[in-house]
Length: 82
Image (cartoon, rainbow, N blue to C red):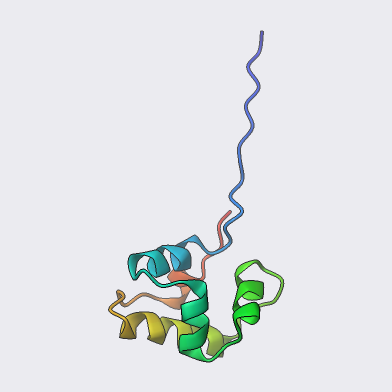
């Protein structure tokens, strides 16, 4: 009998960004407040309903670094999961 395997796709769109938030013990809501964005807007961007702007991405990068995060590239932070 042939074994059937299914590859489970990740439902996380931005795993590196979420990993950096976890390292800093920062929630999405805290990040939204830090960069002056509505919490509902940041959740929409994280789930792919709306796109990140370059200004959003730069503000997030600076906020993470200001909270002790590693200096990273925007490409790294906003790389989508496959």
